[in-house]
Length: 143
Image (cartoon, rainbow, N blue to C red):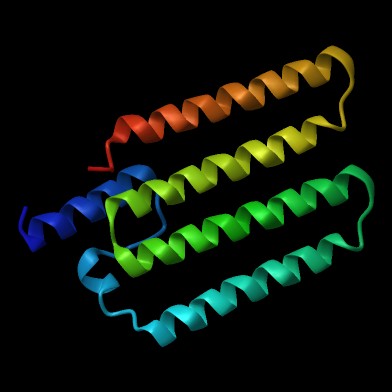
């Protein structure tokens, strides 16, 4: 696969996966170590700020907030790695991070429920997570 075909494949794959990234292997190679570190520092700062907002909450809303902050942090880190590498496996990792974050937040939201309602909520979250992972696997973004 030549460089042009690879770049087109990455853009099409990213679009098909719903990635908000337009980075390709060609643009990823232009990210310097300093640019990467600066972007990583910004990701970490956003995470710290999000966690501080959670501190004003208590109970399950606090736990949900914490899961949302952690999930977004994981997504941001995966996106940064993809921007740096442009590799299809890193694009897949972004989608997996999104699926994991969605699942963890959904499970945490289920904690507000009781009895059968909670059981159904957890089962729905697990089913949605399994479907998301299967969808990622079926796209074949890794080689």
